[in-house]
Amino acid sequence: MRLVLIGPPGAGKGTQAAMLSSALGVPHISTGDLFRRHRDLGTPLGREAERYLDAGELVPDAVTVGMVRLRLDEPDARHGFILDGFPRTVPQADGLALLLDESAVKLDAVVEFTAPEDVLVGRLLARGRPDDTEDVVRNRQHVYRRDTAPLLAYYADLLLSVDAVGGAEEIADEVLTRLQAAPQSERRRGR
Ligand code: AMP
Image (cartoon, rainbow, N blue to C red; front, top):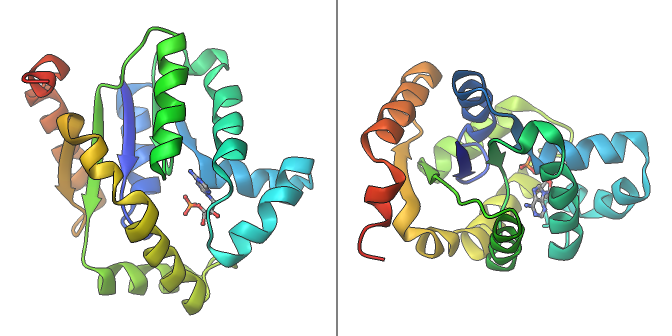
């Protein structure tokens, strides 16, 4: 199973990705986690990414796609993955399409998590991560609407939208049920 999870910051993508990863037996790949790990280790990539993370801005597409390429080449990702937080721009989605074409594989679905902005901002401020000051949290919502929301049209024929307000278990169950109910061939019909 090859999935992309899309949703505004605070929608619970990370929690859902972890639950779906264990249910489906494929690795959870979070570009935010990868960037934070590089930053904490002080790698050259981490030093380059740091100012973007601190401002809630997106790391440049070429840097991000290069990092994902390396991660998807690792053996555990050969048979499937859950991408959490990537792609976040149309050029990143084009980059992903090229990577997948090179391996002659396709995405099975793109899952969108939706929630009202006030709920999202409240959740993020409650989480209290060091890069979650109110200005940065609001900026990340703005960046999502500006740069990432266009991906919903880009992936229209693979899209499965799920309400992200509610219990994590129930939401994950709904995603799993709907993945089973709507096989790839059906969602691609009419392309
Ligand atoms: P996240 O944990 O997914 O909210 O990501 C935290 C931060 O990492 C973002 O605010 C960006 O600075 C950076 N980041 C994560 N994923 C991407 C991506 N796909 N493209 C560019 N920057 C990203």
